[in-house]
Image 1 (cartoon, rainbow, N blue to C red):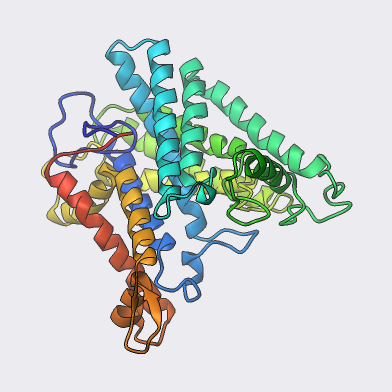
Image 2: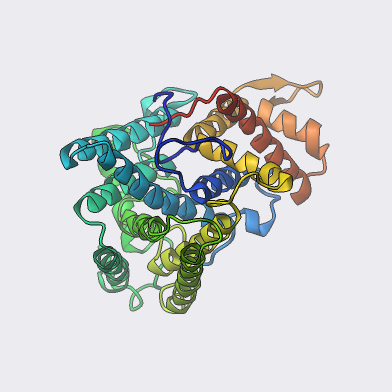
Length: 412
């Protein structure tokens, strides 16, 4: 990890003068909102008391929380388009770019494994799957596709093949030991589905030969291998959005800029509608990353990106003071999104690991003590849980603010 300015997961200040190709500030802003919301929903004071929209759907369905990760992957796809174009302008060939993509994906994966080991640093605690692993795989596969082609029609064909192919696999391929979907067990049964079966098979192999590789849900993993196919489709949909946005290089008030935003918003609405319609036969499901979920979540991300673009992209300076102050935190978070996520993981693990014995003789973690004595006071509610989560976001914001002030932008 270095301290140079990155092109995919970071952003310069909203008011900075940029000499090289101007950044798409809406992407940076939405990335910051996404990573802040990711920390918020990941770190409640009491997971038993949380607003329904700040928790994942139990199985089928979709909440605000379920939209966070696909939005991030959508932005990875858009940013990869900008990154590749910037490097090509510097003269990098395809071989060099491919090497960069492989190396960056490898570093993301290694960071994930290091974070899995914290704080025990014991091999058996290693979880191969996870958020950063999925980001690494999606960035790798989508990046290699974009090195091969950036034709929108071709990318849409690839995306369609991934979405339809995944539906065919889960609907028509029998699960060993369980039988046929729909006939022998319900479609998208939590245990008896092809994705879960593959996760268990891989876990059995890694536990036997590598002595590690647990699953998040015991019988399956929300970031499992097979569902990575549709997660790549999410990333490529973001790349299509990036290509569409790159066609507009004129000012904020221009007709082409308005058409770009309207086109992005229209595509978002279409994606949401198609996702909901397909969801009647192939339900929205974040754990399995179903094809309908891909379309719906990508549609929401496209709408959010269009809204952010209307606020900040190519807006003439000076900006209204209210706009500067209301967008500033999201640019700070977006500038070092991976650093912010890493900070949150380390903070939670450290606070959960270290324990203290109270006056009542009971031993509690620093995390529980901070929540109970600082927020709930013995009466945990959804509001106290949310207040604690907001405090965690604020704490994670502080090191990002320091990096921002020092103009240090980490990249992996």
